[in-house]
Amino acid sequence: MIAISHLEDLALEAGEAVMKIHRAGKIDVRTKDDRSPVTQADLLANDIICRGLRQLSPLPIISEEGSGESWPDADAISTYWLIDPIDGTKEFIAHRPTFTVNIALIDQGTPVAGVVYAPEREELYSGSDEGFRINRQLMKPIWGQNRVAVCSASRPEQEFDGFVQDNGLSSVVKIGSSIKFCLVAKGEAHFYPRFSPLSAWDIGAGDAVARAAGCSMLEMKTGQPLRYEFKRRWNPGFILQAPGCVARLNQRQ
Image 1 (tube, helix red, strand yellow):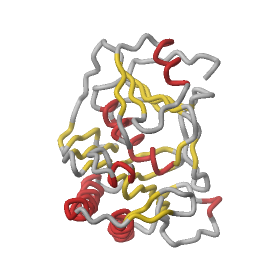
Image 2 (tube, one colour):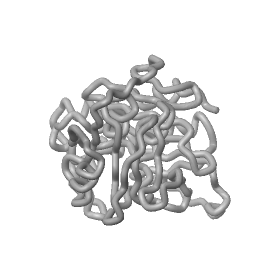
Image 3 (cartoon, rainbow, N blue to C red):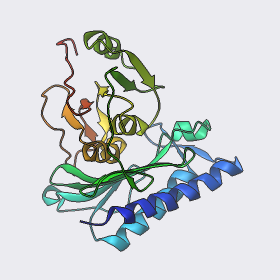
């Protein structure tokens, strides 16, 4: 296993490059084929991360911004890097502080190491067999009795209100990007339900961080542990749960 400190260093390097563009205030926004935005900061962070990962290992890389590589033996690949150079590009463009740099290592369908770095918030979350860390310090989170759920600030799902009612939740935190995973991991929330598919690179790093903290990540429909496949770019809806928490999932969901 590659030391988590190497991935933390790489996320910090990419985050600093992103922040230089962010502070300058001159953000060049383009539209990709899928109509989602991309900036020069996304591409720069992608280059930094991909270059650094290739120095660490020869593993394949899957990135939202593309690695420029093809893998004819894709069916046989089970260990690979999964990255999102800037998760929350819209947040970055709008100068909201919740955009993140995401790096994950997937092995046999499971995220075994991951880093989520929110450069404007100066928050670095990581998870691996070395444990759950915040700003490089090992943490043992404690979840309170008041049950809290997190959800997207910009893309609300109609099923979410029913989930809140069915589970008697005391409050809801609406926030962008993979920070949602980190709030559950560090004990500030208990659930993160997602009812529709989401790109694998949006969730791999946060999933690794949360699992290292003891959380469970299950497919919404089956209740089985969420697994990743090299050729699958979209993962099904899921429920992230803090230790000891079991969500009630109504059939309408």
